[in-house]
Length: 282
Image (cartoon, rainbow, N blue to C red; front, side, top):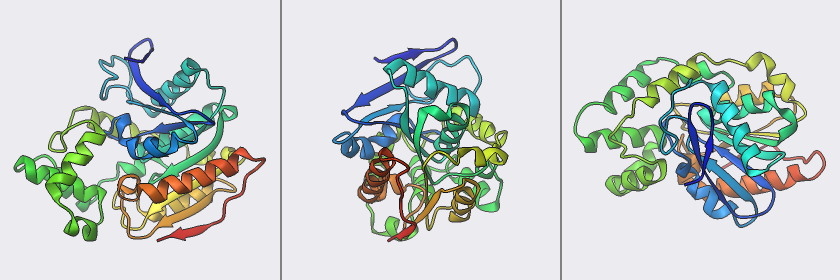
């Protein structure tokens, strides 16, 4: 089992494919396997690196801090371990916040940033609203089937769920993220607390030299498009795109379109100061 040994944790990772390096960072409560829809496609053209964030999946036990800074430093250590001087960095949700921190810490090691369904400030993700309280409660009480459905409602647009076999979809998503959707491991609360303490938005301008793509999903209740637009405004030169009809789980239910957009953006960024057009994806 490939592990990068840190002082307080062994970080599990997986490499696939060959070509320009692409590092993918996952969000709250999601193991590196959550990127499988991307890896299965992008590894045809790139070398991909995915991993379990500290304290999650196979990156246990973890005796050290659960903080955005510590998780960003884990990604740097992973790049060292696999011999990457730099990489195209893709982050989803909390992974996008980690990606921003990594780029601020070691900008020379980030060839491009793709920030998906994420936030300009970590505390935006930890905001307490009536919807957040209600959905959090629903994922923790009731039958296991009810809890799985509540989790899916955080990821997928209602019109997509109405057409889906909910039980089959829950099994599919659970297989990707590394746990039964009815279960809420304790690390989730620690990760959300880490997000609530993190805010580097005042330094976003320092990312101007890094080609950046910000992607939001129209029906995302966790990272609404207004956060993506704000993030793109804070990073000089960043491009903003909104996927119509999608929600927070866009990397799963719109995998083909996401993969194509990432492929185009990364290839453009491989060229000197690659340019991408601002557009809306339907």
